[in-house]
Amino acid sequence: MIDVLGLRKVYRDRGREVTAVERVDLHVREGEIFGVLGQSGAGKSTLLRCVNLLERPTEGTVTVAGQELTALGEAQLRRARQRIGMVHQHFALLSSRTVAGNVAFPLEVMGTGRAERARRVTELLELVGLADKAKAHPAQLSGGQKQRVGIARALAGNPAVLLSDEATSALDPGTTQSILALLKRLNQELGLTILLITHEMNVVKSICDSAAIMRDGRIEESGTIPELLAKPGSRLAAELFPLPPAEPGDITITFTGQADEPVVSQVARTFDVDINILGGALEKVAGLSAGRLRLRLSGTQRAAALTHLAERGLLVEESR
Ligand code: ADP
Ligand code: MG
Figure 1: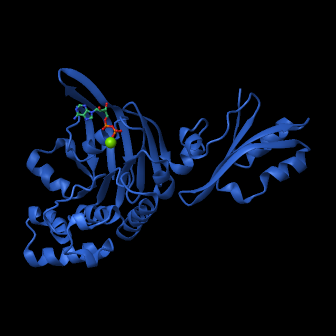
Figure 2 (figure 1 turned 45 degrees about the vertical axis):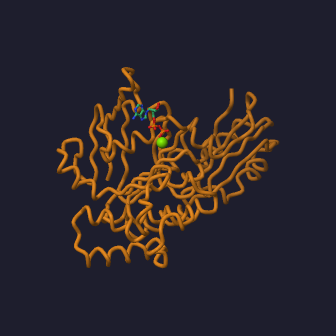
Figure 3 (figure 1 turned 120 degrees about the vertical axis):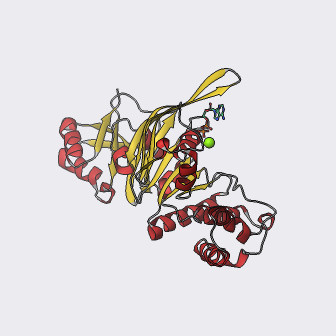
């Protein structure tokens, strides 16, 4: 649904060149929620703004819903952008307009007739759970309600794709969860493809099907959540499941889905090894029970025990 190839973005800042995004490829499949995770300054916002060409890439191509945006002229691009919704961290609402007026705004720009506009605004406010706030002004709303208006407005053009730049970063944890639940529902009910960027692991953990980790303008890891967790040395796994520092010979096992089986006690019994559990973390991620355990194993059949764990589909890594 979104294909970014060889993307590079260089800003010119007072005569100095700043490379914000360097050789990035990104593939977001139709109907998925894809999260780009990274710290402040990693280039996430730049990447997102290049996806709808709010920023012109210095190099590379961007294709959304089969249309190569980087090949379009300004007029065609304006039309194509109507099919790409965008949600902002600080909501970007018009304070002089009511909630209904804010959601109506993009429809006015698109030239939607008055009656159709009214119908659509009502429908969108119902969709985000704000039907009773149509006449309120942004200043009268909580942060979560403001973001619901932002989301309704982003959906006005019936987009195939929703881009979200830190949509929950200005919200408290409880409100964050309710906005994430709303995004997930829109994804499922409307088949909406969502590309979101965030610096919060929690967002990826709650709703993403796939993710990429960005650092210094580059993508370090990218794939479905189970793929990422199962990759040796995965940074996503390390960040999702923090463990105490390892000593040489310590074993880290990562499981994605096999958490219901009593593998550790089985291995201890079958191979007559002593297992010391040094740390562990378990979470529900992308609908899977996933986690990591740090173990110290001793016994004559240690090697056979490790082979057995790997054969059970667990990722087994030994610290050096
Ligand atoms: P993130 O969203 O991950 O925090 P950004 O995409 O905002 O990262 O920024 C990436 C880098 O590009 C930073 O070094 C930032 O200072 C720089 N940058 C972003 N926007 C501009 C701009 N308009 N002009 C110059 N430099 C910019
Ligand atoms: Mg940003």
